[in-house]
Length: 227
Length: 213
Image (cartoon, rainbow over all chains, first blue to last red; front, side, top):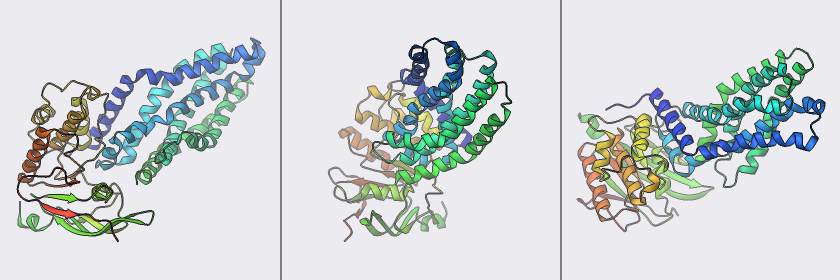
């Protein structure tokens, strides 16, 4: 008789969720397409004026990528709730917050990481100066996990409701605005030749805080939603 | 098994009451379940059978009273790996194969000694379906995969919600066989039924649920 270790449980969950994303890889590409289309439409709407595009490039890319992530947020726990897997997770002897942290990590890996990879391409589409590219990537690398974590808490809170999509967006948006301000702010500062470390450090601090607290909050919210 | 195990019930409900939005669902209930016992929970639709199982497993908290598992109180903060719940929702991923689903269950809950996922699938009559995605299986076959999960995880207490639903005659006999085997090995099971099919071996103890007044 082997009761099963927590690390084995996390590994099993990570493996299963990755296999599921692979099975639904068409759906997984959706946010990526959405982000590319939004960014590609701006030059058409505003004209190919390099000065204008340069000015709005970082902000536009930031908004497009965060909204693309928001698209996939609702599905974070949805299928697990609908087929009863969530009950099995909650009933398992392992800390629920840790299991949810695994699910959040998969969400970030499968939606945010591909978005990060296309960010340089989006930068080229918008004439983003080369010196700002690394700052944009750093800001996105800090802001996207923040969205995954904060989003997971909000998803867990709205879980019990039937049509929670609208409410979820309303809940997440104000919470993610600081990340947007600091992230796009760092890019704008870099573009103007100003120091940009401070906003990035703020994002980092937020991220560390969210890494510790969000899985705990999500686990508590989920238990409430299940009753 | 020592004397204390014989006396101490696996599961005990004391004054267990559950209400949702101030509407009483069931209770107060008093019962004890000892190792080797299979007990039927009977009640009409909406009499709170599913809620009772969820409370007993620790998924939701009772409004009053407590659940004791091997003598220690069960709370939602501290669930036990001694309990396996099989509900209306099977907790299986339709995109994955039977084997993948079972391997995940083992990772999450551990595994009994002397059994493999393949053996478990064979003993629920799904030999040859190991690598098939569950989407291509029938509802009854999916249920059998969920039953195979019960065989694998080291839980002494089974809480089964309508285990006979969706199963053919052979499946119903299979459930009864699994229950007998589990009871003989010192496990215990609580099963709900609306009465159409029932546990046939011996005369199981019954707990009747009625709407609380």
